Image 1: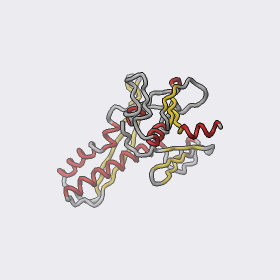
Image 2: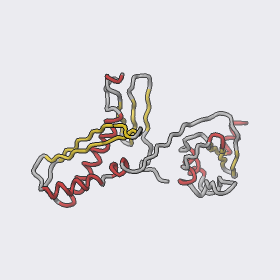
Image 3: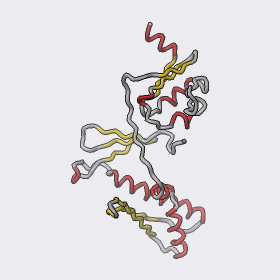
Image 4: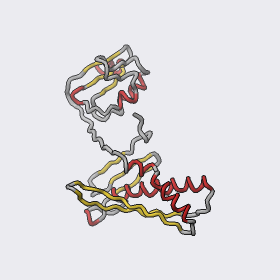
Length: 218
């Protein structure tokens, strides 16, 4: 398993209704709710951000294709919106994407670009089988299984494990659930194991250097 983003998108909220700070690799975006929903409208709401993702991905995809073809199309506009309806007791979401050109474009090029728009990466995500997994970090007393070598120790707390699969899909030389002693602390450098343990979303894994643990108990 390899994530699309090198670093996860991180969101946080305080007590101000309902302003969220969304951190990405190069800064912070403010998200909020409109006044009609109890917010202050200081940034785009979640639906706007979702539709913006589709619009921007479409525009970038079209621009790449146009430039590769050498077509004279200086400007493109994409409008996106959505509505929801219930069919057979199931909520269905329909997204509309309108492509507009500010200068004359031959019909055959328009038709080709319409097809290219459907192939933009965000379109493929939205029209594919999507699953949203939710994890919560927990701590506290629980059963611990220790895996150690002379340098470092990895603790596994099976009662807290939520099976995100990040450990064994991203560092299989250390984590292998197919065998009983499934954590091998000799399978990678200690700092790499520490790095992997830190992305466990459930709190089921803990790492420490043995010298640090000894110092803490002296």
